[in-house]
Length: 132
Image 1 (cartoon, rainbow, N blue to C red):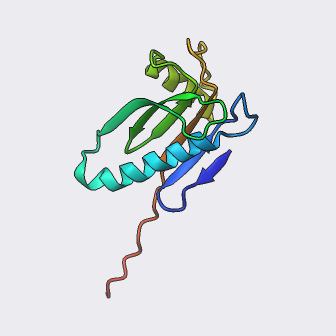
Image 2 (cartoon, helix red, strand yellow; image 1 turned 90 degrees about the vertical axis):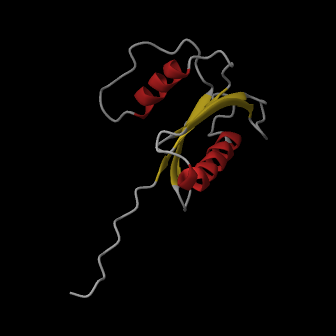
């Protein structure tokens, strides 16, 4: 699934293995994190990151989730334990979202039930309207 937060981010979410469709709770979490990061942009550095674990509010399966939010990318991994290796999960997500042949060399030690990613929209440069 591909969705766009009309204001700030492009959202991509995989199909949840339990629901058979993207998880609405994970998408809400991505949108909330995108909004929070967008508001924090003026008071944080470019390398700002917040990570953590949460229970997905409204998830039918009551899945725990791991999240990592930076200004350039936000990811939410569903139904993983607090001990899941974030770097391992990121390699999995990178391979799943890759458009090339850069496949995953090995599956992650802990497979997420679903995951989603939000990336900031690249805004078109504003035209120069100054008088010549």
